[in-house]
Amino acid sequence: MNGLTLDVGQLCTSRERISNACNIPQSTIYRVLKRLEKCQTIVMKPDSHGTVIEVVNYRLFQHGEVNDGQQVDSKWTANGQQVDTERELKKLNKEIKDKSVQSDGLPTSSRYSKEFDSFWDIWPRRRRQNKQAAYRAFQKAKKKIDVPTLMIAVREFSKSNKARGEYCPMPSSWLNSECWLDDREAWNDGKAPIRPKRQQTEAEIAVLIELRSLQAKLTDLRSQGKGMTDEAETIKQRMTEIET
Image 1 (tube, one colour):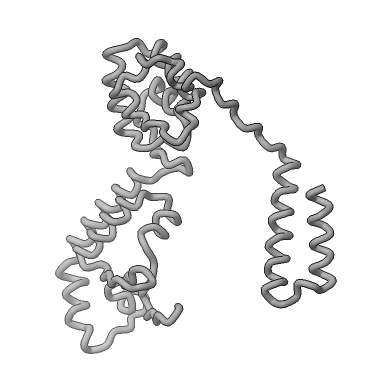
Image 2: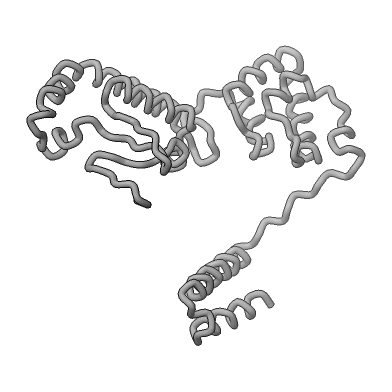
């Protein structure tokens, strides 16, 4: 692997890669790895390519292969720490289950009120972060303003220029600052609200996918020095037809 040799039971990866693959926050990945390392289930070694994670006694438990030098450590790990390791792994499984998220980054289990879920769905998607903090702020806000009035303000804000701009606040910050009391015109800076982009039709999406696929094939042919072949010219002609 780019000059790095991995042994059986080893994996070169990173918290970011694991997070993307498992849909779990990087902070949770870090805690899980540290706890696995603490109970001597894995060993982590930093490397220029990432982090090399080695499963302790992988050969023993997966293949039954172990040399004499490993026997003492293996027996101690398998017997002396078996109970502690199993208990630790149960905790990790529960933590991962509790932290498992959907594609939008929210917990799969609904632990929030319907009122808050409605608020969350209205808030600009790209700023739907730290849901627990937002829920706590929402509960506090309910003591200061009735929910229907709050929801009207949230809907107006979500359609404003500020909500669609670069400096859209986090939902918890907006609630804690009582921004429902703000001047509504200030949310748009004196300008008309930005209209949402038109959703692409299925036909337009299909054309875009085909165009990207053709571009990838053409790039591949050029990298092989075949940019002037009949196949490449056919692809160029098709791309021209699509664009026009």
